[in-house]
Image (cartoon, one colour):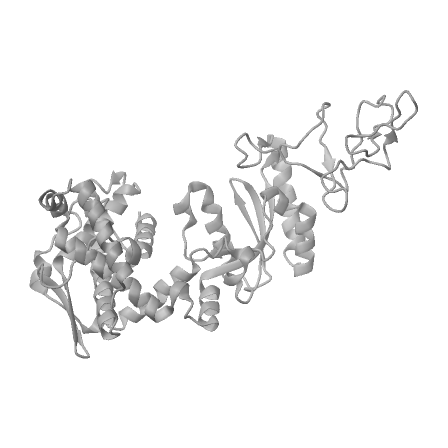
Length: 455
């Protein structure tokens, strides 16, 4: 249960600064916390706290998380206990309520920074706020603020508080861009490289699939082999050493559609083509949608042979040089099998639970774990539902996050970096925040708030 819940928090925290739709601050609700510093005073209402509780609850319900078989939509879910800090038992309700309280502190600190830096919202940002509010009013309130307020009341807010929500979110965005530039453009390469080294693992792999690929075959069901480079790229690669030339009745040599002389298996009466399976490469067959390669299950005997082969290859390569490992990659041709070439290898985020993105992605987390503590140059082997992954850890390439071939791995790099830096900056002001304990005592718990999927 612990791991499941912590994963949801990580997801919600990442969305905190971008997805929270309705918050409140100032005098339109009871003030829960105040930050007064350097001549700037900002406040945040208990309504924000309640709304954030409801959104977290909505996330837990939406993603179907459970505790002992009970879903987050069941009130009993919130009474289960666990040692979230590794030492003290705490209810799920208490744990998440505490996290949301810290999140509120982050928002308040962000508002303080906006005011302290003397920032203002752009006309474009204000227009976007009005457009979003107008859309919600039309769709959820049927054009009536009264009807919309009846819907929003479940989450402790109304139309005016919802507007403040969007204003606050826009201010958070403005502060982040002011401090770090658009897409972290204002952050220096030293900080970026350090963040990359701390949060990403860099490796190359040899992948041995636990299935057989389906290859193109001729009318005899023999696999066809092709040239992969040079002038004859993508043309049939005949076995000119072991095959024999075929002749037509007029004595001319038999050729294919490209005009290349065809070679046949000896004594096959020119019916069985001889392909060069050593130098040529087979062509993979795609599924009907063209989205992935067709495969066939291995037999039990094939799977046993694969396991032995993987272990033997690992033993051979566990003390290999980079050159030796990369030569083995080329020999196995795993990049072609995977359909993509990554010139700079693979980069995975260390603290990202890939299981959360799909059961089939668990092996990515397993690779990270296998390489944890391994020095650069170390080799590990990981078994997944797909086969065997022999992985070698590499030092990070300088500014790898800027390389076009690495775009797949660093899609969230700038956002994650800015989030980390921004949270660190906000936490500097947490000790200056005063919480009204009387208001806090009256506030609902996550168990008591509504399930918020939309606001």
